Length: 209
Image (cartoon, rainbow, N blue to C red):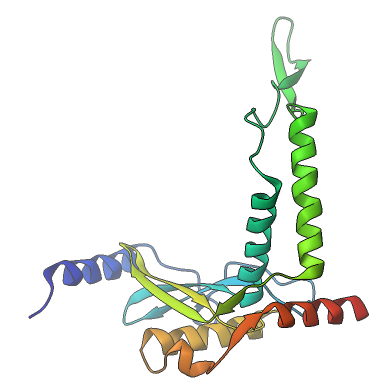
């Protein structure tokens, strides 16, 4: 028996795509530009059409999640942030636009206190140390799909290198196979786990360049 809610959602997905066409490049929605060469990648996005519905893949490399965990632990180690406003009152600069009228041309803000600045300096210092030392943490491959009114969203964590349009095409190819259930992400990358040793090895490679 068909689920009426999912059938209605599928209809809404197709209607949304029909009335809000995507600007595609060789069948792909590529939202980012690739102007500078890079050897390692962290995250990216790509979209495509499957069975008349949009699929948007939001991808992270496991090293990106590892880096996020480092930032999280740095904040935890630094302790509670001072309970203050992040910025002081805004300073405005004006210019005359007539005999009796003025217009704001510059907005300037300042850090609210030395204590807040010192806190963020401490967080940055801890994060730099943890990046050099590594942390006891590991990241497995994963994939989650959710239905939305506009289409399907896929959160994907997999060890690809998406450094340009060719990498985006490989990402889209994998995402399409996953969406069609031709393969699971665990089957595509059997036994893969990103850990401290891999993080440190990549850091040494970057330093050697």
